Length: 237
Image 1 (tube, one colour):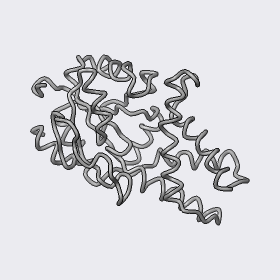
Image 2 (cartoon, one colour; image 1 turned 45 degrees about the vertical axis):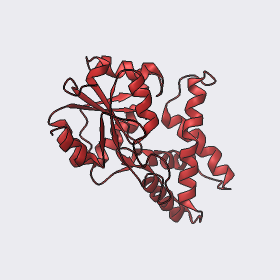
Image 3 (cartoon, rainbow, N blue to C red; image 1 turned 120 degrees about the vertical axis):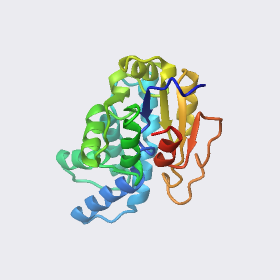
Image 4 (spheres, helix red, strand yellow; image 1 turned 180 degrees about the horizontal axis):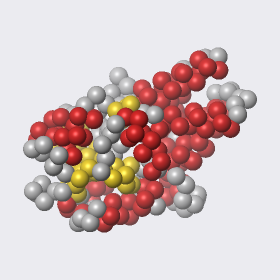
């Protein structure tokens, strides 16, 4: 795979661009403080995140009609609150807690790295997150996207082929002119299977200090970097 033809970098967002674990934990802690509720909020955030893939798989399998991530997160949150014996919340309170996913903090290198990428490439999201979520997150965190694309625009979740092909098509590019940047080997394997170039960046604390997955590249991805600054340098940005 040659990188000279790459015109756009598209990004997995949760875990790659933003630190979901610390951010959602912080939001849950603030919620608990307001309500006088004590729980292990880090464990709560991790459990909430673990509901993400099974919920999407219900859409992919056809068990659920097209449902965006905000709605899937909320369904999971309602079940999680009940399991943790948290009751009596108003619909508005549940909605506000659900929007914790709109208020995620970027990794320390993300904004500077994206700004460097943007000087040479089109940069866009290719996230399973819905458009409102991505836009609100970008506005709050100053993420300088050229476009917000991904699952909701394609009406298909990664790793469905349509999610990749729609992203490239809407940018007016061939698949091989697009590089997916992700901190997850599984994401990159799917992208490579559809003809995308691949950029792996390590996020060794995405899942906390005991993380055991995605600590290194498990294939010969086109670019392997320690962070966005390193990747930008490798790409000549």
